[in-house]
Length: 484
Image (cartoon, rainbow, N blue to C red; front, side):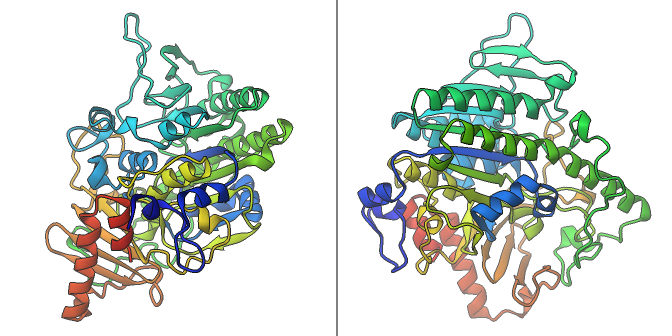
C-alpha cells in the first residue's frame, strides 16, 4: 500500500480515494476545536449536558480505544498518531516515558499541530501538555519551552488542584493564585475564546486544543460547583465489587470492597461529577463564541478523554491502567460539517487516529510513519466495510515511581506489563509473565469471565499472531494491514 493510500479515507465501497479527493472531501481548511479531558470515563457523560448536546448534533464513537490507559502515553499517541512502541513513551516518567522522552526524541516536530501550522493554520494549545513539562515561575528560571507548531501556548505544569499554578504564556511564565478567577478551566475558557475571536477576525483557519486537568484527582470543582449533586453515588454496574473468573494473578486476590471503600468511591465520584461541570460550561461557552464569530458551521468540534477510569469495578479502588473497557474505551464525540446529527459509529477506532483525522480535515499530508488512520470517511457517512477489525493497547506496568501523579497501589490496580487487542466482539490480553485474558464482549460485556483457557490452540495462535503484528507495525500501511 502506498504512503498516500495508507492514510487516506476508506470509502463505503472498500476502496481508497486519492490524496486530493480525501482532502477535498474534508472541506476547505475548516477550523478544529479539540477538548481533551483527563481521566474522564463514559459514566460522567450523563452529568454533562453540553456533551449530550454534542452527541445529539454529531457523531459518537462507541468503540473508541486508547493506546494505553495512562496520561502521557495516550497524549503522545494523540499528538503524533503513533502507538507507544513508536513514540517510546510508555509511562509518565523518564526513562520509559514522560515529556523528556517525547521531547528528546524529536517527536514534537511531527504532530498534527506542526502539519496544520505549515498549512497556514493558527494554532493554540491550552491546559495540560505532557507529564514532566513543568514551567517555572521562580526568579531567574529559563524561558518556558514552546514546542514547534503552536502559535499560542498557555500551558501549566502540575495544576491538578486548579489553583496556585505556573502558566507558560508562550515563552514567559505567570503565577496564578487561589481566587475564583484563577480556576484553571475558566482561565483556559477565557483565553480560548479570545483566540477564536482573533483568528476568526483575521479570517484565518485555526486549530485550538483545550486540554483540561479535570477530572483527574483531586478533582477540584469550581467554587460554584462545590455543592452540586448532593448525595450522588458512583454507578454500580455488574462488574462492581466482583472479580472475573480465572482472573490474572495481579487481580485474583482482591477482596470485596468494604463499606469504607464504597464510601470513598462515592465521595470521589461526586467530586469528579462536580469537577466536569466547569468543562461542560467551557464547551457550551466556546460553542457560543464560535456562533458569535460566524464560524460555527465551518468548525469541527471534538470532545474526548486521554483514558478512562474504574471506580469499584473488579473490586478496584479508583484508578486506570487496566485493559478493561472501563479504562480503555473512552468518549469521543465530533460535531462538524457533513456529520449526521445523532449518529453513532461502532467501528474500532483509536487515539492514534486523531492526528491523521485533524490533518486530513485541514488538507495537510499524512506521512506513512503515522500508525493511525483518518476518521474523515466515517465522519462523513461512509459505512466502513473495509475498516480495521482490531486495535492495539500497550502498557508498561509495575510502576513504583513516587514522582508519578498516576502511581497506583495494588488496591487501585497496578497490572504488570501487558499488550492487548480490542475488537468489537472481544478483548485479548497477553501479560509479560505469560498469563492471558480473553473476554467475549458479546456474551460478557462486563468482562467477568476470562475464557482464555478454553480457546483452541489454533485460535490462541491466531490471536497471538495478530497481537505481534500490531506490536511490531511501524507505518500506517503496516498497522492498517495488521488491524485487519
